[in-house]
Amino acid sequence: MILSKVRDPRLVTIRRGGTLTDADHHLLALWAAACAEHVLGLFESVEPQDPRPREAIEGARAWVRGEVGMMQARAAGGHAMGAARGLRGPARHAAYAAGQAGAVAHVAAHELGAAAYAIKAAQAAAPAGESAAATRLECQWQREQLPEAIRELVLDDQRLRNDICWSVFDC
View 1 (cartoon, helix red, strand yellow):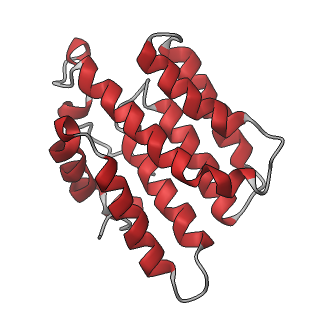
View 2: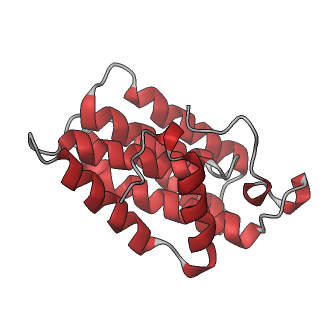
View 3: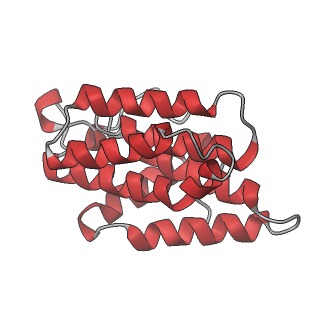
């Protein structure tokens, strides 16, 4: 589980009683898509004919552009998670990262799921004895991609949910 039992109002849109603006929600979706895309090759190298994770990432971006609705982006995310079934290791984690990125349109807090699964994918793909370094590098790369407008929100979210995200944000 990567979602907290109690929702952080900073990750709930204003129209639903939280404090998250649409602009910041869009930035979270784009960041999650970037995190998932960074490891997408780990899935596509195993399942090159399965477009579902890539479609989820593109669905998140299309939602930001207003080209698809929330339900369509979320559904694409669910299909990407379905692509993970039956897989193990880096490919499975990469598909889950894409699925989480697609789900950000529905629940902004899935942004951290995309990042955490991407780190798990990089960690699982690392050669023996190098998983800690791969974890650190992927986490640092993700942080470098953070837009300034959401940087503090995401870093605080990582601090608050690190324990339920396999402690992958200790970088």
